[in-house]
Length: 570
Image 1 (cartoon, helix red, strand yellow):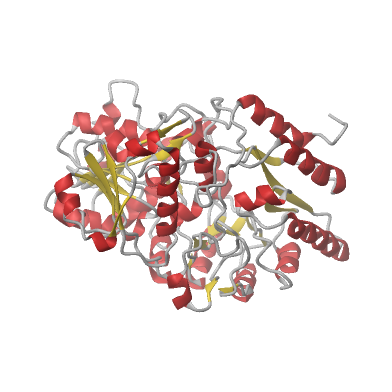
Image 2 (cartoon, helix red, strand yellow):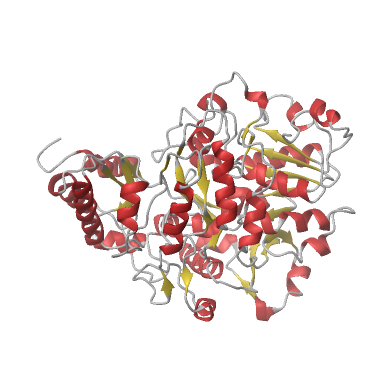
């Protein structure tokens, strides 16, 4: 059964009240790729009665916020699978005309800054009912952050929204603890002991924290007055979030209150991750959307399998490690193969898995050989500025998994749609296996740029590695008679990138290598990334080295134009 979305569906289950009511900016798809469904199913597994209100109307008389009544425990709020501002606006600040998480791909079904809007409405209507915020928008806005859309620093979403508690990162290891702590009403003493949450507190509370395990960040007000202070905060936040184990609490003053961020949980075990994926999802959109058009995000992933969480690439513009963590937590073969078998029984499945992947397709079961060294490590990336000598990059477990998936009855082909880190597999048979068995005709990789100075700021490998990949790809395809394409991704207007750099990119990629580019983007500086900090401050916060920034839309437009022209041609 789907989680109830109406009072009628609640009563059909014999409920007069839900324990938890979730509000989400996405349509409700009951599938492990959609966060609200995962949280709902985890709470349900703990015995909670969970209802969900997808894409509530915030413009009218607010009946969507009152139709299910009050929950016994708390309201949960998420903007959905994307930050609502990234969802709404292009890099040149134009309003998008579609939304992949809405039936028919229609735009306009969620507000800007959705977590803040939904929470404020709920706190106004039900001032005494706790609101717990989570998901990527809340997670990456938990402390002072640069907001590209207002070109300003904004305080923690806790201060702006009035939420009682915030869960950051992936919530599987936290949400049940929050529900248990609220069994008998809101218990601040219990909630504040939970790892991986954030909340507002007063000076009296903060003064009692152990100074040996507490870091006081610069205040929001100081960050606004001194952007270098903001950069210093980011360095501390990123360093702490990339530790394998941390007992450090972060505190940041905002006005006369303090945002307190408790230490993160350890990475999920394989068993814990399997449990999340093995819950009884319907693996489909709720029937309420029948006749309203396809949900593009669902259509894209419905025949795909996510095999792991986390990413140790540490790319400067990416939020994956900030939200999912640097250390890889992989599912078991049993869980992955069971999901593949379930997909073969889905209506309309024609034998083709669209993706066996993750944040990076080929990090399954990779990590440090010596875990004690990993515990001491403070690097943001295991691959930049060079591959860590402690990194176990053996792709054999992944290749064995691929072979077992190919052997599942009903699967004709299992493609890899996620991006592949080509700085990982060196001379292993991985590339040849992927080309021969797991490529739909187009293999995606992300060199992002060609110029070393820009790549260094992006935390990406030298372009020479892509050129070698391109040569290997063409050689293997030639040997096997395969007319396949390599599809590279590139970014313009990254901090440190000049028009001269873009001209050089154009000459190398369009001219020398003869690519016709499809997958390109102008950088959108998103909260809690190194790129956004450099864009805001004009310097690398780690070195204080000044970096040039293409700020105006005209500068950004000119840089992006080089993706489509060769020197002397337009």
